[in-house]
Image (cartoon, rainbow, N blue to C red; front, side):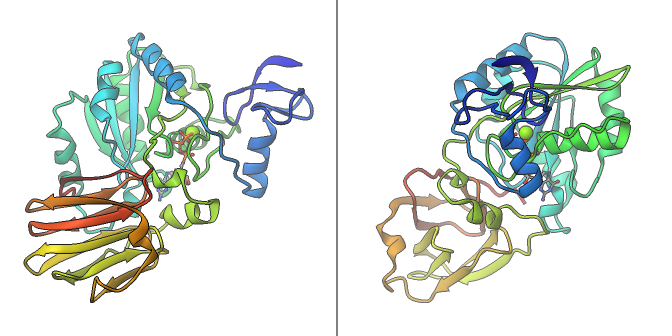
Length: 336
Ligand SMILES: Nc1nc2c(ncn2[C@@H]2O[C@H](COP(=O)(O)OP(=O)(O)OP(=O)(O)O)[C@@H](O)[C@H]2O)c(=O)[nH]1
Ligand SMILES: [Mg+2]
């Protein structure tokens, strides 16, 4: 039977008929589905492949309200399509830059804020937070109260940005509810909207995240997903690098320095990932069989590897990047 009852963990309709389909639970008396139960209690993550179509239609319907929207962004995985989302959702919006704890303490907040201001996307305010460290959450709540246009406030953003984590933090800090939305390091944890009344004046609505089809998280196993997702402050690794040298990250990415002056590459990736510099690029390596993209890097650009992190490069140069063909890489102006 399919009920009208939604799973409190991920938002899908509960059903007790088909174990292979989402929303399955052994008994409709339960509040959460079996997938959420396993993630919460055993850390057993189950990936669900989703298309972005449903999510885009959820975003469009958010855009039809006049309610305040929180756009949650992971500072390590800044969206490429932030502008597209802004067009779909023209509401009053606070940009929430999450996971500050994962960046080195030396990174200045004002600099991050300025970077996003320069996009001219008309946010009411840009606020840096760390949900894990409970950093700036009180201030965020104050500003939510200040900008909200009705009781309802939506949380939107890419999958894995920390939307559900943020809402859970707000529930924990400011309400007497015990409900907990499911959180996980895998993409597409939340499957449908979840509405939570914090108090008489504030109802938060969690939404599923937009999928980044080019994220490296889509192609690695759960063990590697955990390794890639930083839980501690990243200790950036800097390498002086010259022509004919290479940087390798695990067996995931290879960057060959093809041409340019002696340069400095700083890697912002999880500390758990093994990084190696080859002093001679001609050394054989299986990574060479992966898809190759060549970049002409301008002065002061980052190479972003979607879902993994980024390499801050100082001088202009030419590089070849080898990576699985389904993973996106791109250049942008230095974030930090
Ligand atoms: N380092 C760090 N990790 C965080 C923070 N907030 C959330 N995370 C982690 O980010 C991952 C994703 O969190 P979720 O809350 O499930 O993200 P979501 O945006 O709801 O993702 P979907 O439901 O898939 O759209 C989890 O592994 C969290 O532990 C933070 O402040 N710092
Ligand atoms: Mg979620």
